[in-house]
Length: 409
Image (cartoon, rainbow, N blue to C red; front, side, top):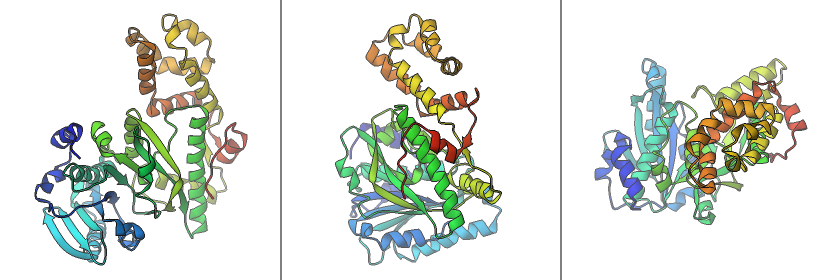
């Protein structure tokens, strides 16, 4: 897939591992490419994939075995990553190798495994899983550019994910403007305590996205790194995954959503192993650990008050006539609830308007939604919360909210 955007990205922004692909064997072609970062994982997820129907489709899994540099002094941690690496090698035979990249031809399979060793050369702790995903996605992007991966889509998931049989075919139905897709998902565990905690967290995620949909936010989507598939050219245009220890999925989606459509594959679901984890400083693992402690102490798990989404709905609706009132902004603010105007003024809406007075309405509205993006939407909700709408018990929030929530049993 030749693209000026991809060529520019690979030349200026890609990670150094991409340079090692210059001698990658050109005789092998892959239909799809799948990226998985792995830290403190066993090889079960790799074996599971290569014994599935998906592995019959000439797939390249890029597994970035990594650890943060803060773990360098921990012999147990290093041994853990080495063990995963050795187990992965045992699944087949080494076909090609260049420095920290190793291509494994998996036995009795039509698919391949590209191992990336980022544990002997650890990842800076502040760059964490974001850099791990970026390394894998950059390698995938390069192989797509070279024409060795035929699909222009990069699949992103995690070691705890069980992928459905139609995982790779779902993008065949997307519209031309779609730049990223999000699979449906549900958490599952045989451990009832762990399962219940994960279910509460998942319910919170679904409640949050449902609230955004109710408010008609264009950023109403799930930001989970294990359920994403994104278009290669668009990935290059936004300069890839941000190198962060957590939240990299949120920020990538936030950037991609400004380029095109985000499609939710409601009827294609990934099963995620429910577990608590300390792999990242915030996100699912730490949240589940917190919920387990709350449940043990018979305390409620609290989350956003539903009134926040009502105020967001008012805000976004008022944006429709902001352009007409750009020269009399005080009157526009006066027609809003005090909470909404207070937060928008704090966020600098008046400064945005003053910088866009000379554009037409179509351009103004487009730039407004780029400005009031997923991150600023979250800041808006937090601003309203600070004005007296503190978090309440999640069960109560779900019961009193004005919007429907699509739960997965």
